[in-house]
Length: 632
Picture (cartoon, rainbow, N blue to C red):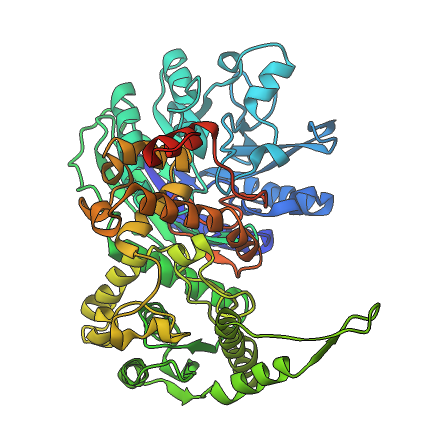
């Protein structure tokens, strides 16, 4: 029987000194508790999402130095941890020094070398070159090393042997993606278990939170343990890391599976602590229930944790939020108040002549319910001044000396309002109080650029921009019922039609609102960005012609017929939003604030895109002509 400590610590990316201190504290505690093995997450010393910090030689040396200090702590306890490994004599394919994403195991002050490895550490085999990951840019894989040595992964992938308490142990040590091999042409776990008799599998990870991902992980890792009849220990970190445009929370959720695939130990999400289990590879354990990770409470937990950590990292203590009487700003307000307290949140309502008494009243009610500082700053006078100034400004052609006068359209006036609110009032007010102001955009708006550059697109963080509109509503109800346990977000805000209130055509009292039909467009837009195989208008039109669209995108049945009476209307709507999604919306997303990732594909570095304009395939054009009775 071995006492194993799996240490779910908070990793501070780019700060190996802080991570070393946390590891040292965890090791001392594990020793005091007579643990035989302590396991830390992947890249626990340097952090994982570091961008081109990986190109700094001095940083690499610093991480290796702290790694040596951890190895020196392995007297009477086996320490397994992730760190960078460097072969200073070789180069990666980019011409820089050879780096490996490595797993180290140390005991009695010495490193344990995998049986067939040329190095005293295990090397990550499979690289997740998708979503937020960019491993091949920085690291060299075991697969690449095998190719270089003219051998196979089978010949290099081997366990680590260690004698603890007189027990000879074969530890099958892998790193993160090596356990997610379904879409690869081989499985590191299968290779290890086929070639060796293992006493346990150990997967150290740096795996960001994604809504619903933990449920899949439990299925995958449980099956691996059961199929190979060997316990599996999964150790993940907590904290937040980013790649500039996208911020990820790491939820931990470290788990131990017995040889039958049952969960026998599990760390609470976002809890940084040592966890212990007495493990016998042949023993049957009482299974624990599978944690549920796919409801709105998990989204709330990820958002709250991510916002709190991000504010701490950027040293921001006060926040200004522009509130409109709509659902997005209301949910943002309730979240921030719960995280940093009502005294640190200032809510500002900025009405124009188009804002109804209804929404102005709901804004006041929200502020009263939350107990925040609240200000009303009307914008109509300044907007009128700006429009008048533009219309009376002479624009001179210096070649012909002709004088032109601007005519300000209704659309431009809408944007002037949005920019006045953000660039003048919110930016000025946040600077005055020594804080920042939020971007309250949701994912549907972000998808099609339903926002104003330098207006409501601005802010220090877009905390809700990875949530679809229906998730924002779910979160509002959850905040009322489960977090505040009272109605802080007025029911009127939940019930009112969503509207920007920037013109008479968006009069909420007349039932006029946004052009986005969220019950349908949430799901249409989601198919554009979150599907593993990206959906295009060709796919959408094919499903529409087959009357299977709602089934494929997951929206409520009957909505297509409700919103579109003819194929012509449906196609016009599809092309309107596709043109925006692949057009101006990209430019807006490039200039948008950082987004807190929740979904399987968040905007920013997670969803890489270029400004190439809309494109329609030949098959789409042919099907469109057929549906419209035209000649392609």
